[in-house]
Image 1 (spheres, rainbow, N blue to C red):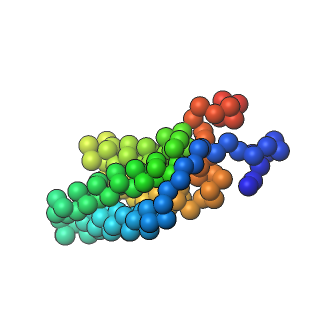
Image 2: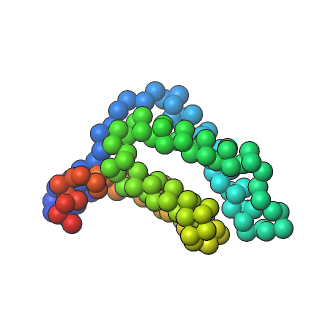
Image 3: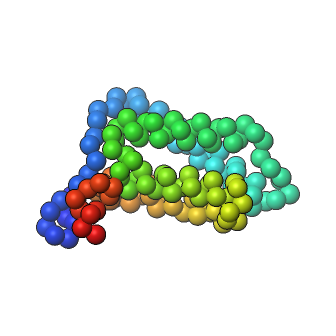
Length: 139
């Protein structure tokens, strides 16, 4: 595990047990969520396609909620970690795009970029506690 610059290990959120079958269910759910999000992005990029069908929105929303639940099952302090803050930021960007506060295509592209970065940073960063930790208060 990498140090936080001061020679100490970064504070990571609490981790709970999750059956191995739940890991595979999470992988399947993530694939479904990416499919739904990809269809939404395609509908915005290729405007002749028009608005995506309602089931695509539901597929994306329901799979996203299930994904957050599965992550919370394992990472009990997800809401305080980098991963949870990134998820909240993605939700805010999507809401802002839906309500016309930011351009829809730009907002959704920003969500995809944030999702890709947040999902692929090392575990020591992704699950680092940044809200309510002693290290965060010293930043």
